[in-house]
Image 1 (cartoon, rainbow, N blue to C red):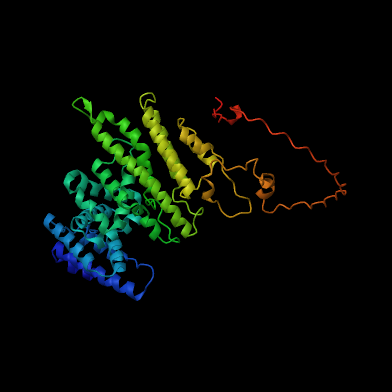
Image 2 (image 1 turned 180 degrees about the vertical axis):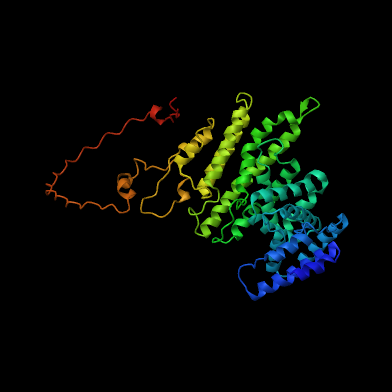
Length: 475
């Protein structure tokens, strides 16, 4: 490997980087074809070549290499785009992408992230779907802190620096829905509404709501295609963006109320902009509830209903704590409507999530989680409604039992009302019935004497009984 390094040192930076890229393709591609199975790893010498000649991080401080110019860096990005576009085998593409941008925990990671952000941004601009699909896998398996950094680069490029270019990013959804699903998860982790700076930009919010409204199944794409036996690394993003979007919907009324001072322009609040955002959050909230219903169908088909929680109770507890903190910051007298709106959305989401099996949480745990929140009628109904508990011998928890907040009771007029208690237990044994006593024989009735015929009534010109009596309801 030292001979290869010395040969690359004699080349110009762009040519050396291109040579390393093709060296990766030959070595990893042949290893993958000869030994099918888990992706082959890189040895330390190859990693050093990648970091030195592609990411410009030299291990030898005594050697002063000429760095790439901006034009050469742009040419390198074009070479990468062409390579991933021309590589026909997805497995090799994924391995090469992971070898290039898999974080190593050293000082070269900063350069990796810089090149990765520019490469993905270019892939969005020129619609290079293979790179976007590889980036989707990278977002799924990388620590959330790095995913948030990549999301910030893309939002800055397409929503901040050149706002009119948001349409380019918006059109990517039809080309690479996997990437868009992971991007939504990343931006919801980035913009958690904990401050005014971390509130989603209106252009980004409108784009995300447009994607989800057009096809709500987009939010479940990663979850549906992920093997059940696979385990994600610790600290990675959520499997679905549902928790992050729920945080947006619930916290948005409180966050916008808190940040009204920053929206003052020329002595007045931009109420039109705030109203447009609130309408978008309302649409988003409805779409999230609809996705919960779609999720129930998938869980039922895969026999996972009541066995796999998509929303973790720990994440819900964090959301409730954030809402409680925001409520404490606001004056309840001046923000009563916003507080009730946030709690209504939280209650609706909790009810639908528990009913569809997305959230596995008992009613007692729910009361404990929401004990610090202000009073809300809908939330109280969700927390205090009775739960129909399954028998001890039955299978796992069935979320379908949750919606019956008021279970039907037998009417006293029903002929089966007296047997309801006996039927409640499927294994209850009925007592043996005693034989009925025999009745004594009845004596025959005496014959009736015939009656004399009545004399006919004289005709009347008017009889009150012949009039129709008008019905009057009792008041």
